[in-house]
Length: 329
Image 1: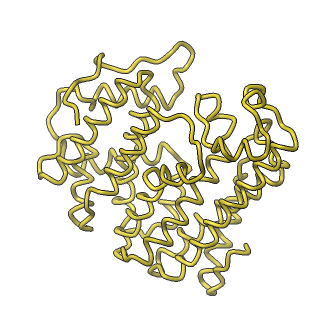
Image 2: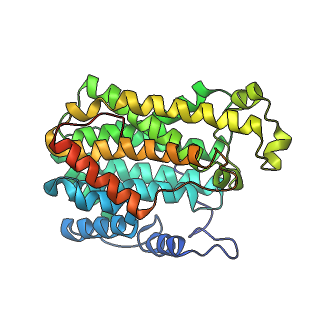
């Protein structure tokens, strides 16, 4: 791990890219980044900071507020805040070199939790979580592997290579949840990995157009060649029968992972069954939304309406109550 510092005291944004989220990130970076001078905050302040950061990303806060057991919501926010900072350091810095160096800095902040002298507010709050639930550093370190990989690899040759990436980018999140639920066992880890990989794949297929715009392509090249979808077609963002066939196969593959992992619901402590079932069914709903637009994700990014999300949440709660947690919903 390098000790070299980023080339500037703050990341820069290209003209016209100053979104509210990036403005928030820059503000926090100036306040708590590697060049900022401050005393380690109190645990109470740090926890409040993590809750605020989670709340700002409302799509995650909904799940935290409604279904994560009350006594664990703060710990969920602490983990989410750590992931949010890592993600921003990877995606909101417009220099590959600086991103990699800042991810090294973030790893040092992580390890400060385990050495007993955290400084960053997220690290202060996270130390309480990893100590309370005896979470080893490996899931966090694995996530950093994926964030670094995003800086250096923009395309994947085979589906197996993509699944290896999911092993680092998605699966550690499920394993962290298992630690919070105090049910981290080999059987549950296997099923959790299926769920997380399926969710990651669903997200990739949902965001084909946006990822291509960012210069990233997660659909394996071998799969494109198999159906005859060429580089020229990618450049034109062309929707044709080959692309439809490509996406149909990928959607079916992601659904297989989610349905296999769905067995995890019944193995979770009762208070965790609704959020786990909700994640599984939410991923399947996204895949159904892709199919509903005839797989033309070039033209439309499929999303779930607020009503669909609400219905899904209420149905999942009801089905857990009555032990009807099959994957046909």
